[in-house]
Image (cartoon, rainbow over all chains, first blue to last red; front, side, top):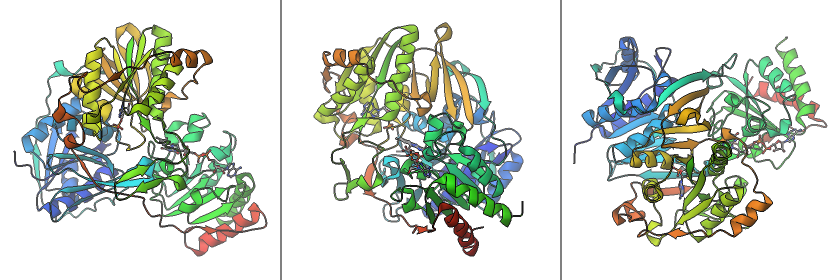
Amino acid sequence: MADYKGVLICGELIEGKVTTTTKELISTGRKLSDGLNQLLSLLLIGQNLQEVADEAISLGVDKVYIGDGVPYAESLPERYVAIISNVCKQIEPFIILFGQTDMGRDIAPRLAARLRTSVCMDCVELTIDPDTRSLLQTKPVYGGNAVAVWASENYQPQVVTMRPRASAPAEPDTSRKGEIVPVTVKVDDSKIKCKLLETVKEEVKGIKLEEAKVIVTGGGGIGGSEGFQLIKELAQILGGTIGITRVPCDEGWMPKSLEIGQTGHIVSPALYIAVGVSGAPQHLAGCSGSKCIIAINKDPEAHIFKEADFGIVGDYRKALPSLIEKCKALFAI
Amino acid sequence: MNIIVCIKQIPDPEIPPAKFKLDIESKRVIPPEGIPPVINPYDEQAVELALRLKDKYGGKITVLTVGSDAASNIVKHALSMGADQGIVLNDKAFEDSDSFSTAYILSQAIRKIGDYDLVLCGRQAADWDEGLVGSIIAENLGLPLVTLAEAIDVPDGELSVKQVTLEGYQVIAVPIPAVVTVSNEVGRPRLPSGWGIISASQKQIPVWSASDLDADPSKIGASAARRKLIKLFIPVRERKCEIIEGETEAEASVKLVDRLIKAGVI
Ligand SMILES: Cc1cc2nc3c(=O)[nH]c(=O)nc-3n(C[C@H](O)[C@H](O)[C@H](O)COP(=O)(O)OP(=O)(O)OC[C@H]3O[C@@H](n4cnc5c(N)ncnc54)[C@H](O)[C@@H]3O)c2cc1C
Ligand SMILES: Nc1ncnc2c1ncn2[C@@H]1O[C@H](COP(=O)(O)O)[C@@H](O)[C@H]1O
């Protein structure tokens, strides 16, 4: 068997910088490679990568592999799988780390199948078992009702994706040293069968959910699109933005790009206000990392009250107007 | 368009969390009492997407499931929605198969069926929340793959797949045959019609075993699993909720703000 060593992160870039999720992977990857006493590497594909590679080194990466190519969002998964599996065959990492993002969700399963190895999706914790030196993969299952810990002792490399916001992003330290290594990312074009016809970003105006300090989320209890006026107003006064559960999305009250949860955005604001939200585990998967959670729900038995710090039992139509008034007075708007 | 849809039977994913129980020893989920298992919701949406394609372009829909005898219930459900035929892949040797083994079993069945243009899977099964099987089938069969589809059209003999992304969507052209995994953005699946239920009840649901599929025993069942489950537990909730009381909701709201200021939240 080949000698698989080290941790390889498949990084993602946005506007020429590493994403927050990639920074989180670097902090997790750092711990894993220290536990194994092996190198942490990062693969980046894009253009003019020198500066971002230096940044990655300051964040704790030992070796940055840079490939000249098109960012994931403008490329095709097929191309990325081919590139990444080639790189992995050359450098034979023990662990291959992705974020549970559009890219990780799509690439990690195909990569594992192609490398004939194991894969675990959407982990919230990764540790090295000090006795067996195997990778323990902790992942929520059954929509978040339960948590499973897996190991795959006989398979290498081990492909894993990590849920965004499950770990703190790495902090820069410019005294760190590392190496930058160019890699070839050429693939046989005749093997690419899909064609990308169109990419559409449904621009959400204002603050991005992932970066918001305050999020006010409306759920099925809002009852229709009109009710979201109150949600928007409260969010605005608090300097935050709005989110939704699956129900307003399915009902077409609000755009799906605002959905928070297992299959939507994963957020961790300082303040999360859930209004008319029952607290299904699939929704909480996207917001349980929030510092403070407030629930407003007319059902005292609603599960959301088990997951919140503060609660008001009652009709949101009666609660929100005075909440808005009080906050307005407070912030003197 | 001949379409194969892979469907899985799972415990109802929307049961109240209080009803969710585990057997820690055996690391298994205890089926909730009185709540029957269901078709994985994404797979029901995959059946819906297949039916929309059939409505537009004609063809035949075959549903496949790897499961026990009871799994024939979800096959019947798909038939009553309008699928043409269903097959249950059931064998003792299939028990405790992981994603790779399940994908292998399904790939063997798909090869045996042979005549197909499109294989649809759900984006993930809402029990173990993996999202692997569809992608592995594509790799096994050497077929192009698009994940997380919300719509499919077939202009000029090629698929045009609308793929959900976190911030919008992409449209991807894919030659046939292909594998596509389906996301919830497809929307509500149709309800079975009265006629659908009657005709489904009259259909035979064949069962294929390991030997019918010419399945390599080293690739199926618990011994082939690439991962081992070390531990399964229910996470402990760390938050204690302080309910803000008040004569009216308005009064409680005012008190809440004062409380938040005191706690340093705002
Ligand atoms: C596989 C899978 C994945 C999923 N992924 C996600 C996901 O990513 N994100 C997500 O959000 N959901 C997801 N869901 C759906 C999830 O299981 C729940 O169905 C959903 O989150 C419920 O949304 P809700 O709480 O807003 O609505 P409901 O369950 O309809 O609850 C509405 C709540 O509002 C309260 N209410 C009603 N009227 C009022 C009023 N006037 N004032 C105050 N309170 C009121 C009610 O008491 C109730 O608690 C998923 C489901 C599955 C099966
Ligand atoms: N036992 C099974 N029988 C049929 N299809 C399955 C089975 N398990 C998974 N699938 C298909 O693969 C998809 C993804 O499953 P998973 O990788 O387990 O999350 C599901 O939505 C189904 O379409």
